[in-house]
Image 1 (cartoon, one colour):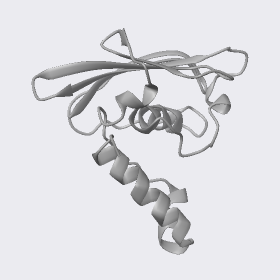
Image 2 (spheres, rainbow, N blue to C red; image 1 turned 90 degrees about the vertical axis):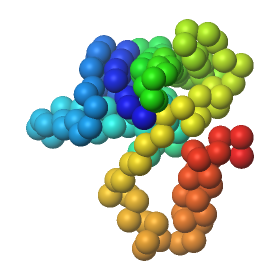
Image 3 (tube, rainbow, N blue to C red; image 1 turned 135 degrees about the horizontal axis):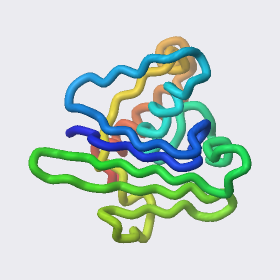
Image 4 (cartoon, rainbow, N blue to C red; image 1 turned 135 degrees about the vertical axis):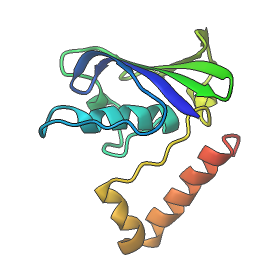
Length: 147
């Protein structure tokens, strides 16, 4: 699986972003506060429909904007898919797959699979068992979305 393109509109610090990604390792370099973690958070959101940093979606929307949009082109073998998520505060988020609306945003789960390790994840080892159970639940859903 390969993420070839990431597009953000009003997500965190990005009013607009179009980013082409190459196969293999991609490195983001910049000073503190430049938005490197925001990029990873956006990819994580597309993969899991959640943020590793906040529980609610409202902080994901750039200040002054009414919604945020995330778009990713994913290539798996010889097949490509376009996944789009619109984050709308106070209403249900919307999802589209290859430009076709989906009845439920959760239907995109499993299309993009990623491993994300953040400093907060040390709680898996050091923290209480509830965090480990939540991690395993998320892992099962990523592996088998119908669960």
